[in-house]
Amino acid sequence: QRRQRLWDNQRYFVERMAPLGYQILSTATPIVPVLIGDAAQCQRHAQELRKEGIHVDAIQFPAAPLGQARLRFMMNAGHTRAQIDHVVSVMARLAGRV
Image (cartoon, rainbow, N blue to C red; front, top):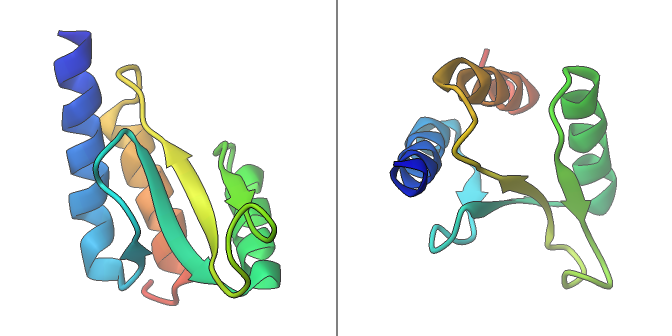
């Protein structure tokens, strides 16, 4: 059941993020990297998410190629739909979609 919830959460997150225009770099695992590109902008996104109580890692050079900074979201079975919706709403705001 936990494994099923994990994958359900991962798919739900990916589906909810799709209309926002972000490039999701991989959907093969519960770790979902979202391309931001610019390292400074990626850090700003991560800071805004953290202010909202959302844990996210900002990955940039040298861990990612220059110009390909990304946010690493880690889905788990314990996340609720409300928590995932909150992440997506913050990402929508950051994308200027709200």
